[in-house]
Length: 405
Image 1 (cartoon, rainbow, N blue to C red):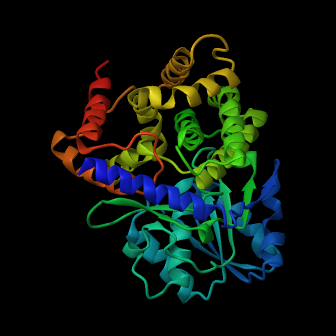
Image 2 (image 1 turned 90 degrees about the vertical axis):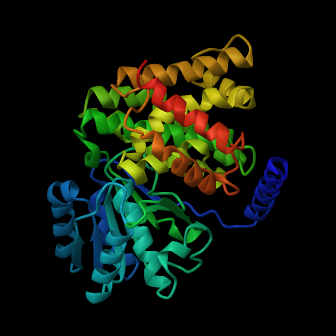
Image 3 (image 1 turned 30 degrees about the vertical axis):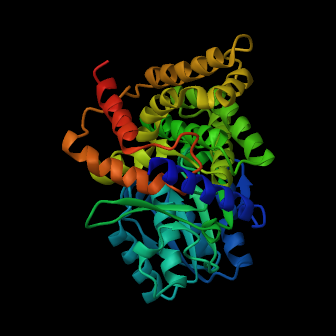
């Protein structure tokens, strides 16, 4: 049965890869540089927006959004503000945004924040154009298929890549099941990459969101199919930049060069995994977000090196190339280079105060985690190794054990 399942998964992924060659993989138009948020009113006017739905979390809604909204209103565009997006946004939150959008006659979205506000805005926009389709039926690939209202994304962290991806990750309010809606129409029209939005971002948030971006780049790079020359190039460039600039940004919140480069790296990694896909790291990380509210970047940072070790020789050649590009090791076997790359991920995590494992995972939850992770990954994600329930369980046990090391 496992052999037949794997054959079905690989056949599905192969067909998706072929079909993907004929799709228009649009990137959001990047607006870059310090002060680039000042261009938002002009972008809204160009897209005919007269009343914009601004979606943020509480902190960003209090500290960063007011100045942007003041500029928008000064340009004659009205703003409606939803500022209650939580980490790992729930379906309840998405419904509230949709209802506020409709009740106020909005005609565009502006998402400011990390991945959560952007994902919540994307999902709400999907409900606007698909009013008769339950959100639970949108999980998976290409379930929206209708043009969204104008959507501008302004990341305030350099990591999630949601400002450039086809994905919106939402948590079902009742079951705590976290799932991804993935459709090309969810890609924002513009990504405003203003390093001022990440100035003085707390070190812990800087580190975990940065490692989230690294996870996107690496998982895209090791997918067995779907990769293109462009996705490989962007994943390589993002990985190199993250190795160079992440710890600089972590140490100095006012290092605008590092902040700007990390935003661009996250953008590149976002498109790389939009085109190529992610894998078992994300599938397991999403279960932690759904069950325990574990921040997604933190979950990815911890799980990434553990899963890469588990993949073993299946990814040695790809990781060896990344080790060469980042200057970690240019001589030696692919295995030696790959292991050096994984070791440096562990070392980066340690230097930035990220734990090696998680001790908050309840063993009675592991069967549910395995079920959710495998349902998410298979057959959609072109993973280098297809996990069985037994292997996925062993990896989760390793995540628990690593917390004691």
